[in-house]
Image 1 (tube, rainbow, N blue to C red):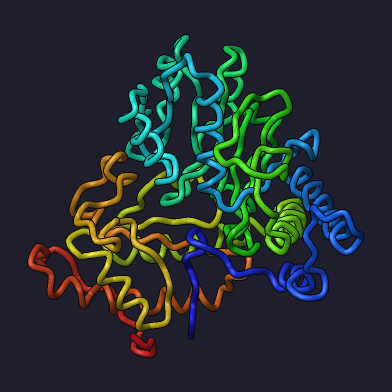
Image 2 (cartoon, helix red, strand yellow):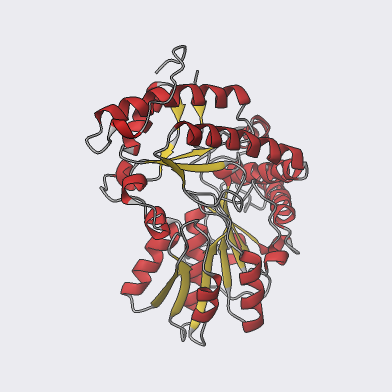
Length: 401
């Protein structure tokens, strides 16, 4: 059996989305900027997608939707575009657990002379809201905070932050890449000025993102060229991607309107999580058990390496990801888990399982069946584990490991 539980990394393109985009690779391949009808008809499909995404995000005007190439580009445009307008302000506030798209940019800006405030989180991954509020001053150019964390799924209090910053006139950017399609998003309820999403996180194709820019928000482009996206993001549009994210947004909105679907996903996630945590005394949940998106769990196993777990899972046909950056060649645990104060012995053995609306109960049962053999095998060879501390978890001998 092949089981994919790495949906925070990317998702399958929904078959209905695929069907919607295929014509734009062959029969309807015109440039939407062309004056002739062959291209102009394609332009009308971009407008339709823009309206769908605006509805998905609760935007007041489709003009507020800017199509980009990725979530990373959207984050960069939001932050760099804002500080390029407010050149007299040199302070940026973000959190210690942001996505690398924001972390790397802020590190670069710090080297360029900007003052960066990194808001801490507690052991559950909960943002220190008071610390953030106390950090805002007259020199603050922008606050950039994620909606939901990509490793733990923990949701941040973006509505409270937005209300606070709106009163003070400070631009607020929300990285909602890991929230889109998992929880309802309403930019007016959040009170954000800018918000980023990425299509491939909710069953659209890779290579297309969105930056919501509230009407009246001042940003400057980071790319220069043509007139596309009203000059805010020049370059010939990725028509199949834009059509795809429009269709995916429409479908995600429909799924979110049916609470039972998200509850079903959360129920499967919880069953996997509770079963695994109950098997091993050396396991722990990383992040809040309540305040998170419905598809994500991050489980740490003490005294064994997450990469080894992933390799054995892969051999068993299960795709997941590690909470450690070791998979990228680093020997350090992820910056998210370190910021949360997760013990070093557990951070190195942390695994993220992330479900989608296509995940089945049968797949969860299979993953539960293969994990005991894998973890027990690694504990037996771990030089840091005293086998006398714990009886091995029962192993399903029918499982293929």
